[in-house]
Structure formats: structure tokens, C-alpha cells
Amino acid sequence: MTTLVEVRDRVRQLLEENWDADRGYCVPNPDTYPHLWLWDSCFHALVWAALEDPRAVVELEATLAGQLRDGLVPHMRYGPAGPDTFLGPLAATSSLAQPPMFGHAVRVLRDRGFTLSDETLARARRGLEWLWTRRRDTESGLLFVVHPWEAGNDHSPRWDDWDAPGRTPEDYDRAARTAWNKALMADVTFADDGAATWSSRFAAAPAGFNAYVAFNLRELGETTGDAELLGWAAELAAAVDERLWSPRERLWRDLGIVGGGPSELIPISDGLMAALVTDDGAKAAAALDQLLDDRRFHAPFGPTNVARTHHAYDPGMYWRGPAWPNLNYLLWLALRRWGRRQEARDLANLTMTGAVASGWAEYWNPETGGGLGARPQSWTGLVLRMLAE
Image 1 (cartoon, rainbow, N blue to C red):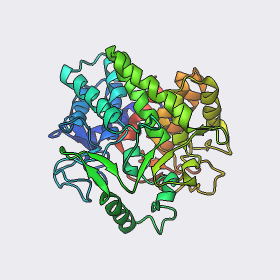
Image 2: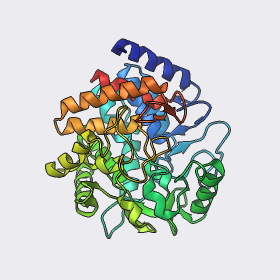
Image 3: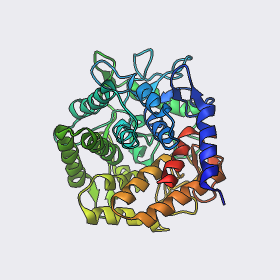
Image 4: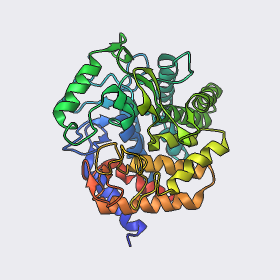
């Protein structure tokens, strides 16, 4: 059995190997992902904090340093080679958003005794305020994304009715991904500072993304005593419950604003994430219970990304079934929020089993533990925080 000391040593080695001292952040993987990604680096900051390493603060500062003039914290800061695909008109960063985990990172770092500057706190607040003011659909009260990469689950089957590539290995090759991205970005509108603001082809209010924003609004609001952020968090969580809950699936669905269709209801683990913010205990229980159900998301090496009995489920296909350590971490937080401590411990142990079996991979086959994607990947070090808590 792998011990906590062995996990700690392996995680420290992993982050050290991927640390870019000149730029102040970990690359997720130096070969596959040689840039800074927003939620990756926020998760890296949490792992550094679990290691009691001051680079937790350095990484969070590097993440927020890419903030655009009007407030968007972009989903990427490019490395020396620049982008390998069109992600907007900017030379140093993408123009897209991503789940803003910096509110949660601020809370964890401060709770663990790290000192954050006023500038860091101000940047985090402005980043969340930008999403609230620039990406809010007035009719539904929900926040929308203008590209699937903004939601985090890049090629989820929920995007199938937008003609997303990825249904089979044959149509999820680099050429298909590049062509789809090029077509989507051609219809994106940009603000004066380069931030993506709208799309005439793809706009969706994903359950997961809205839950993540509400969660981070609440985390930052509680740690800084900001009543306005707490008000926005409560308002958004209520809109998620009102507009996105699916009694049939017992989880939260996505909502298409431009495009979409029946695929918005496909049962994926993002549909459990509003358990992080809902005040409805019955909804949270109905959703989280599915983590124990072999017909839904329970698997030998951790929760599946798509319900196991759904026809879209493919445990070896990117975002169409595998287990993801970052999602495991968020589900672990949701279980702890609702007092399901033993289930949270079990999930932490399953995540450790998957991480070790997969070679600390970016994601893995939940049926076999086989590693998928980049190996090793920095964010898989989140298992240390899950076990140490």
C-alpha cells in the first residue's frame, strides 16, 4: 500500500520537475502542455500549499498576472513558443475564460497561513466580477461560455449537438479539433481588451461552470468578508437550481443559449457539481448518491465522467468517460460540504489508487486504471490535499 509519505514525496517530485522558475508556475506537462492554464495553476497552488511550500503564492500570482485590462483572467498564458492554435487576437494570452478556481485558492492559502497581497485579492475579485457582469444571461440569470474550452470539459458529449468532434477516436484527431476550434473562434466577438464576449454559433450555460463560479464567489466572499460577492454567489446558485435541475437525471443539466439540443441532458459528472453550492439538501443527496451507484458514476478507479450505462460512455475517450483527478477533488469538496466524510475519504483513496496505477496521468480509464493523456500531469498532485485533509 502506498503511504502518505510516499505520496507526498512523489507529488513534490512531480511539481519540482514541472516548475518553471523563470515564469513562476508549473506547466501541467512540459511536452504536451508547455503553457500556464488557469484552473491547472490554481490547483497547483493548492498542491504547493499542501506541501507547505511558498510557491503556492507565487503560482497564484502568476495565474492572475495575465489578467486583461477590464478584468478577464484568461484561460492560458502562453509559454515562449506562443500558441499553437488561434485563441483570440492577443499575443501573450488567450481570450477565453476557464473555471475561475482562484477564489477557492485564495481561501485555502489564507486558511493555511499564507499571506496574499492586496493586489492579488483585488485581481481575484475583478476576475469574478468580470464574469458576473460580462457573461450573465439576463433572461436565465446564468453565466454563459462562448467556447467549450471555457467550461473545462473540452469535448464533453454535452457538446454533441454543437457538432463537437470526439464521438470516436477517429473523429477526435488533431485535424478535427483544430478545424472545429477555428470554426468556433471565427464567430466569437472580442472586447477592446481582447476578451471573448459573445459567439453567434456557440453559447451555453453549463451546470458545472455556473457551479464553479458560484463556488468561487462564495469562497472569496467568505474569506474577505465581501457581502456583494456572497450575494452574487447566492443568486447564481439559486438560478442553477431553478433553471438547470433535471428531476429525471437527478443532476443539473446544461442550457443552450445559441445552439444546443438533447445532448445538454447527457448525464456527466459536471451535473453533480452544483452540490458545491446548492442549499437544497434533497437535490445534493440525489446527485451525490450517484457516486456510489455502479449504473451511474461509480467505477473501480474513481468516478466516471459520463454515466456508465449511457450510450455515450467511453472510458478511454477524452472527456467521454475517464476519471479526472481535478473533478474528483471538486466532488470530494462537495461530499465534505454535506457531511459525507467517509465517502469523501473513500473517494480520496480511489483517487490515490488511480493516480498511482495510471502513472500520475492527466486522466485515466476508470475501469482499468490505465493512464491517459499527458503523463505525468501536475494537477494529479491534488490527491495529496485530499489525503492529508
